Every structure is written in C-alpha cells, then in structure tokens.
Length: 55
Image 1 (spheres, rainbow, N blue to C red):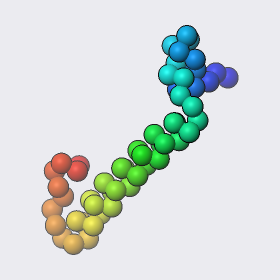
Image 2 (image 1 turned 90 degrees about the horizontal axis):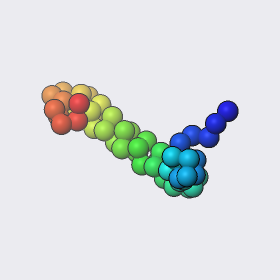
Image 3 (image 1 turned 180 degrees about the vertical axis):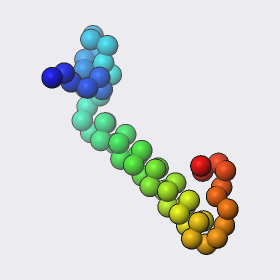
Image 4 (image 1 turned 60 degrees about the vertical axis):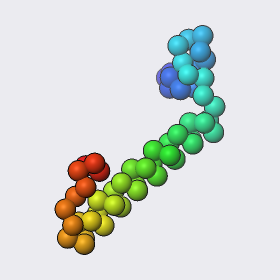
C-alpha cells in the first residue's frame, strides 16, 4: 500500500501536504458542492429555472 500523492515527500514527486492541509481542502470542496446543490435544489423547489452557471 502506498501513500497518496498528497502525503508523499516532494523528493518522490509528492505534494508533501500535512493532514490538516488536506482536511482543509476536503472541507472546502465539500462545502462548495453542498452550497451549489442547495442553490440548485432551492431554485427547483421554488419553480425557478436552474441557473446555467450552477449546472
């Protein structure tokens, strides 16, 4: 089993990120996706056409 590229040392072609840095990235992506889904669902429930920039 190998380490994910994010945790590998730079000498081996990895990004050498610490666990807190990776956790922050994952949390930011999750929040963004949730926020977009919330807006799409809200527009759908209100009968408004989807925002083309969100889809």
